[in-house]
Image 1 (cartoon, rainbow, N blue to C red):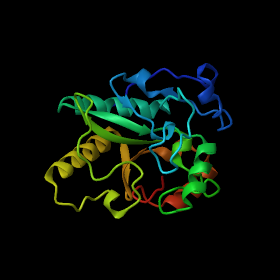
Image 2: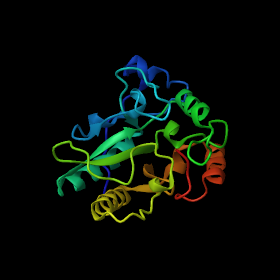
Image 3: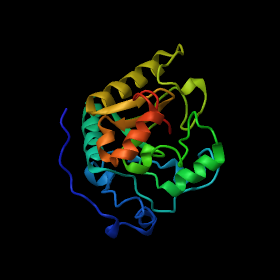
Image 4: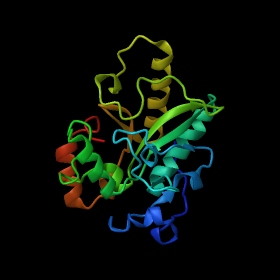
Length: 220
């Protein structure tokens, strides 16, 4: 599948919620919904339904990513719509300041990337998203766990017995793989663009590769 060219949106034209990201080395980001308005966005860190129990993003925060990531999400969405499914984005670009708060709330290096180690979270470089499936009527479908379920049940390889969950997860995984993403061993909802290393400064990419290991062994 090929990714489409998209128009860049700079921090200068984003809302106040986005301006806090300006210190992150002027990363070029786009609003995912400006690339494909049919993708549903439900940023979990904009509300209380997350591991901290309170909002970490201000009202009006957009789901942002690097343009190449948004293009590949549009490819995935087009494929899913053929089967009467759609993507829902739980998280995309995440400012480093928010990553610090997540680390303070969890201190669990098995799931949450220490912002002081390696490159921090790949979300903070605009190259990762957290995504799930919904049906064509915007209803959630059965998946292994909810978002930020840091238990073995959230592993990439589903070991449960529910055929509907297995089918939905396989569809999501296959779709995202073919659109140009890698999955994550510990979180079925997490996807990173396959060539993520080229979007980081060389030294950061090297340190991140040492921390993350293979594309199955990253962190939130």
